[in-house]
Amino acid sequence: MNKILTVIIITIFGMIGGQCCKWIRRYLVPSLASLYVATKKNKNKFKAFIYLILMPILSMGYGETSKLRRLLGGNDKLTRIVYGLLLSIPFWFLGKGYASIALPLAFLVKAGGIPITPTKDFLFEDLIRYSTLGTLVVL
Image (cartoon, rainbow, N blue to C red):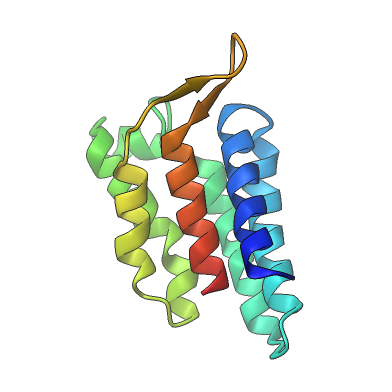
């Protein structure tokens, strides 16, 4: 699978799953990451399945009503940092420890967006978050 196409699809799925159809972000993003690794020349089953760890992490969320936010005393910035660190866990198994810097920084970004429909926006922050995630997958 092409690296650029993989980043684009992961980004789009992450952005869609942030505003509706949460299952797309929770299950398709990790599945696509696993599929990308499985189709590379140096196929490694462990590496292909390690991205499935993202499923429960992406399912827990980090918003105002999340358990993680409550656990961290309602602190938004701390919640976003911890969430980014949790998302970096599978990358550590793959020798990409730098994800523990990139993902917390990406999830700290608050950049607003452009309305697309009365209920949906194109969020620049989601573009940054999920393109970072996708880029880390293909590196």
